[in-house]
Amino acid sequence: MIGKLYERWLLEMWAGDFELARELIAPGFVGHWPGQDVHGADELVDMLRQGHAPFEDVAVTMDVGPIVDGDRVAARWTFSGRYRGGMPGATAAEGTEISFSGHDVLRAEDGRFAEYWVISDTRSLSRALGVE
Image (cartoon, rainbow, N blue to C red; front, side):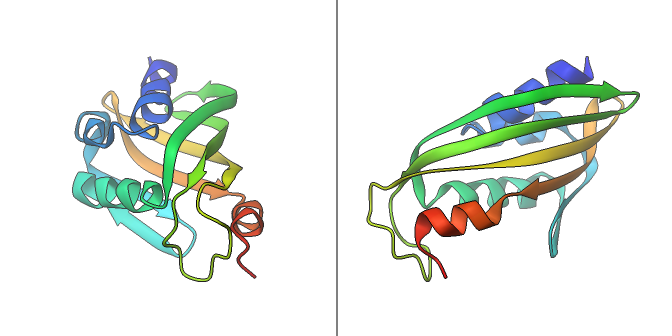
């Protein structure tokens, strides 16, 4: 069950169905990004929209997993799309194709995700966007 929940998390919600967050996460959800915690569905939806805003034709693939262990699930993914502009410091031309990978670990509670940890390859993303 948790593996299917994660597939919806990654392949539907992260691919663009942001409102699905309200169904997939527990009321006390906390997402841990490096340097920032996100609490609840509203903040998660905002984070998803911000992350997608500079890109179009977004695709998300699951490269490894989901690997389930009790109430936790882990996976490796790749995010790809075309840069549409607007990121401070980016020198890449609009239309530049980018991709970067990362890893997720989530903890489920009562059939929904209660906690999330993500590690993204921001160095590859910055390099693709020409950010020094």
